[in-house]
Length: 196
Image 1 (cartoon, helix red, strand yellow):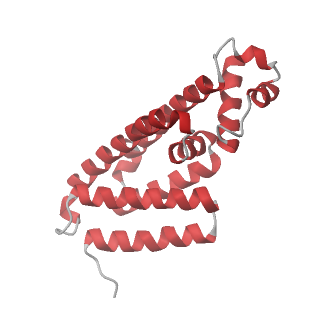
Image 2: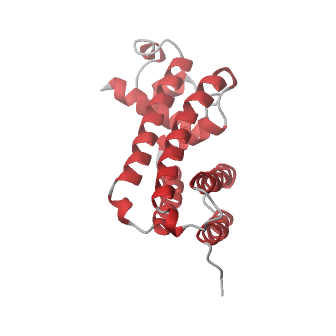
């Protein structure tokens, strides 16, 4: 029980305060144990942070794979892709796991940068494969000027840009405007439609 409480408290603290702003003392205090008790499970704050990151990566991979392979799969491609953007941004807002993963991926602690960047690419690669497969399946609906990998790269660039806006400004009118504007341009571009 304490181990799970410790992991939850660490995830919450790291999500809210980052690596530098979180102390083992504050994590221990939240769980109601002494700081020394953490060493029963983890050798250091760094080890606890890496463990938290690996757990969050697994959760995010699970979310992404189930989103694209579950009941959403039956949605029209436009609705599916837009829904993913909105749900992932909402997850960032309400889920410590997602906010920790995104924050850490974009702002890794310097001493863990290489490890975090390498492991973050695992999620990007998986998402890229899922999207590329989807775009290939729906190629007949796309503007013939764009290949599946081009559409995938453009979509991932939108997602990255929205996360950066979310990191700096939170959920705001500015973010909502960016979602709407970028989505309209992206969708009209890849499916070849034009506004009247």
